[in-house]
Image (tube, rainbow, N blue to C red; front, top):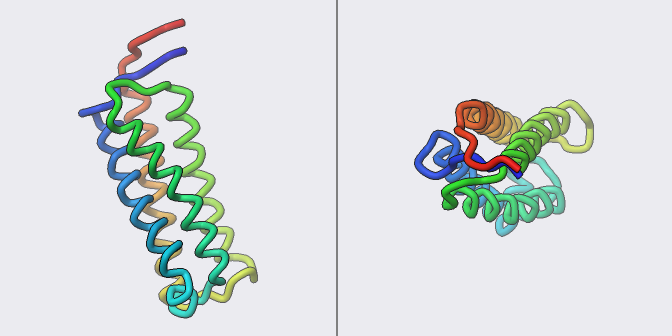
Length: 135
């Protein structure tokens, strides 16, 4: 297994920030799905399920951010998950699965751009990280 340096690097800081923001967003969507549903024009169950799915992802990111090294393949998976979340968020706005309000469009676009930014920063951090172990 190949591991890379994490904590106190661009990668570690990005994993930490992504974990904090993903956790906060997930908790908000999960716990406040009913009022957000009306404000955003999205189904309560969609918001609750999406929010709930972010919580273990955020926990993983926070765990990895605290580690001195992380498996390279796992970080590639995180980058891929962030790219997929971004694409799915944009796809959601182009379908008729939801009828977002103006605030719903803004919320979805803002978080899609933020997640894409995390993916880009994690990619840069991954590319610049030094390899610690080869197997």
